[in-house]
View: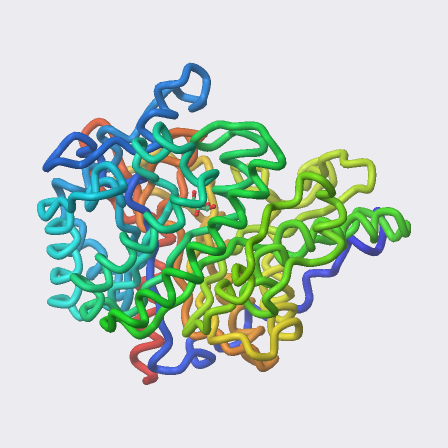
Length: 460
Ligand code: FCB
């Protein structure tokens, strides 16, 4: 193995006094998203989403499942709010289902759908927990897909802005933070290029155009929400990890740089510099998006936070061959993602170096799927997940020590849930869900997190 991939795991000092590294106003939370937990897809006037439709495509979801029932969170709201409170977190990250609030993505608003999120937000506030909301975690109203090709159409940008303004108007003043998109890279690339996410399309140029529309919708929604008033802590959530060369060969180094430009910087450069990375545009060639005058300036709307979702690093081979941590004898999760906490420190420091004007960062997702479904005497001994969280929280503390302003950390996920193309076969929760009975059981990782938060509060 080359020196490039074999970073010694020394940069994360997990013996440091972790609770003392975080100030009393740090956000410690857990995260979920609407489609992955709510169920009740036909209740109270909710419209169809592109994920409802995608789940019906044979072969789209590995276990043939869908989101109709999921974790029954919609029906178990009060109990789940108590569960969240029992962890001792001070914030909860969730997303709003656009088709609940506006069933066809244009025109009429559905007060009953919004009412669910009002109960959720009021229930959090009553328990002293800060609501951290995301407007779009991938469940587009199907009608927009059918009528105009969803995010491929520039008009969907304006539909999203209307939706953002409506949420800001009715819920904004009760939200601690509000993000526009969750992981636009996934919407564009997984949904429109590789086709493993809804709407399941495979067209590189279309995916590039979708990414442009997502970024534009973010920028224009920021402006509209600012004008509306309400929540003043506005931002977006991006997924990222360091792209590193598989070897020290110059071709691998160049490939890793390009991969970084095409994934991370494709989203962060427009937000903070108002331009796409030149090398990524050149790589797209004729597949580059059509950009109208004013688009790039709109994307650069000032933000109050940037959410970062981190799971792993990306090891890049110039020949495009996938790289497997397991084959290299390195630890990996049930998703086959390498467990690499140093990558979290690295990417936080990289962002800090690349964008001096960046707003405070929240780690809006971090966690691991591990094959821990067996309940032993009513307990789930998920020591691998516990260790994952422990080392990644230490990696966050390390980034703070190096001067990066990270103001929050949210575990993905509160509970086991519908993991997109993998259905219910991958478990990310710190709370176990028995899908037969819907019983929730705190895993060892949840008990550990509870204890960490107790220690942290005690010293504040
Ligand atoms: C992220 C998604 C989240 C969850 C985790 C494992 O990409 O935002 O919904 O699926 O991965």
